[in-house]
Length: 479
Image: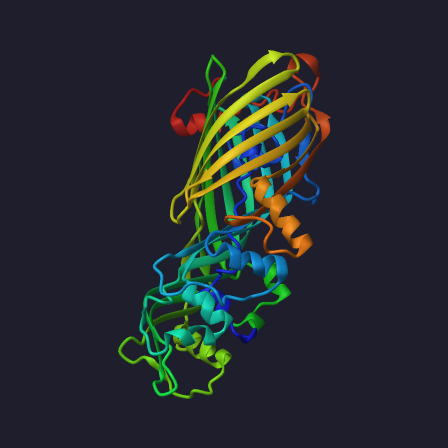
């Protein structure tokens, strides 16, 4: 296969892993990550925390990878660097799947604004990626070696290349605001300006393939749509990673939390509902050659030539056109309660359900947090709605003015996958392929946010302004 052609984008983000970075162990921890991801959450502690908080460009990232389907073949590629699909079963009905979602906070800055209503506001710069694709075994075989189809000379393959999926990446510049509505109820919001980096979407609804023989020509046909911000890899440069707002967008998040008298904590969020408007220089193609299939009657045609010609069916007649793409909006719900057995030890179980709104996917996670003083260890079994079970582990050290965390959403798969790569042995590991890692740090600085009774100065004291959310909901302006 010619590396200069974007067959992998077209037929297969399939070799791209699926990535997600929800980091459920950080929910309800009052870390900077928690405050920016869940808008109603507090991040400051009265009489202890300082007024400002930031990660100071220090790492705050989550990277998770996995691949479901044809695990042994993908494991060979990852561990040994060999792309060999000679034993891949063809003419089956099983569809493989890959998903992608990552979230990296480059810079965060948060301010304790006012004691009254516990107001906090923050600013963040993130880079996010989202994606999902379903792909066929025939696609992998074509990308490997056209000769893989020789045992099936002159046999029809229907729906052989019915691949469907998308992948997009973008910058996200956010403003967050939260406040207490009363002593138990809180609201928060996050408004973001987006700058698109890359986008690709392929939807093959019908396909036909016959590998031909020495006396019968090869035939191939596809029907579907293709949208992209670029086609050839050469169109991408380092400049594209710089936010220029050539592809602008907007998104918003809303969150609320409630703590009952018995200590039960409830949280609900609508996250990242928005869109990106891709520039007029983007590509759009609606293709259909079912009535006029590609015919290659040269038995000496190279595999790379065949791949390029099939790829050109989807990209050969593209037009430049602007289009909109939705962001990967989610809804979250959490319920938890802390149990203190003997000070300073506590146990906090929490159930989290998260569901994508516009794209396939979601999770149900059970967070088990064990805390001793400022050290917390969390075990997080998770069921991914794409049919995967994961076991996460997270360590967190947190004081009122410093926090650092390290974790994995998929610990066991990570250990075996890393071991397989180090040993360069595809026999290490079983089941789907996966690895996960996330880490972050937060530091608070400035004046201490003391309670008014303990300080001659307190942000918000003397501020007669009312609650923002009380004005929206028509409540009283009085505290």
